[in-house]
Image (cartoon, rainbow, N blue to C red; front, side):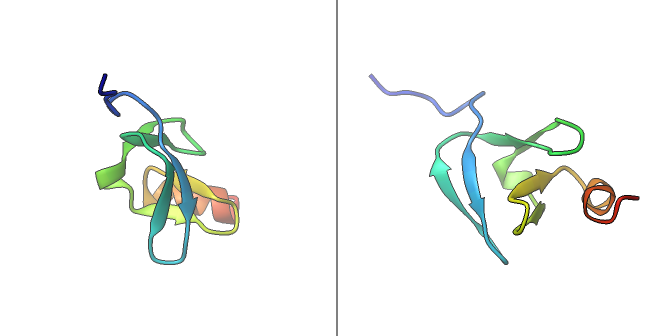
Amino acid sequence: MLMSNSARAARLHYMANSFRVLAPGDHVACAVSGERIPLEELRYWSVSRQEAYASARLAAEALHGV
């Protein structure tokens, strides 16, 4: 039986210029808003915190306490 990755959160390891998929899925959750971010739209993350962010604004809020 094939299992679909749709509607399943992925587990990622964030690196400086990319990320590695540790557990398959189609999205991750934003660490600030909880919003679902499709992997193909993921652009912002913190390597040191290992967190994903839905936008540059939310990344700045998390990283700089804005």
